[in-house]
Length: 250
Image (cartoon, rainbow, N blue to C red; front, side, top):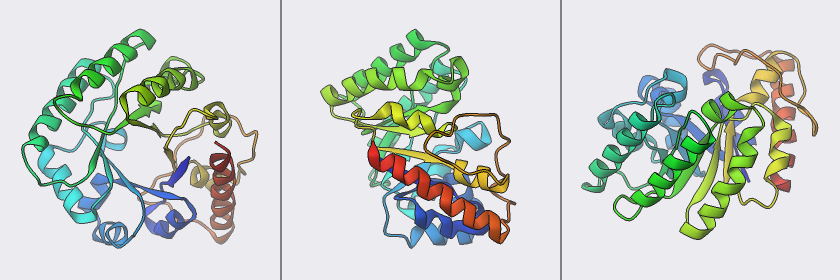
């Protein structure tokens, strides 16, 4: 499993300790140094659409501008985490729009949402049915709604999703990680990658990630303003390395 580290703006080089990149599209448009950093990297790049941090995705033109600046391998299509039907329609319309142009040479990641497990699978199946007309290549499992029901629900859902992925030929990515021990549940599931800023969040609070570290509520680090002390910086590196070990086992 690839580990995508989401570093603070003041410490972008922490991304080097992961095995892939996760790029925030809104930062690409707002900060030239951020865009230049990721544009210059010869890494596997996934770019988000802004829905997590901004609570709404960038519009199509903004997202395409960000794509043109950093050339990601995968892009999360626009979604609306708390409105499953509107989210599906938005994603479908976006895929229809970009399929008519050659503007973006990248793979697409869709993100099903749902207020419960049954609804989540209904939208997952609708996205699978959509692939015949609008091609996409990755399915993202968002921490936003899957943890909202039960913070142990995502591994159970992931097992079913991975079965569909093998049948229909797409890959699976974990959008966000709050509980390191959760990764143990994904052995032999063929999850492609996970993104997280958790190693930095814990380092800011002087906490170490270990093999059995479980979830607890933590305010997320401010990626735009955080500036780590030397001690926090070293702890962030240790935390990233600990997560890499776990990801390498998966």
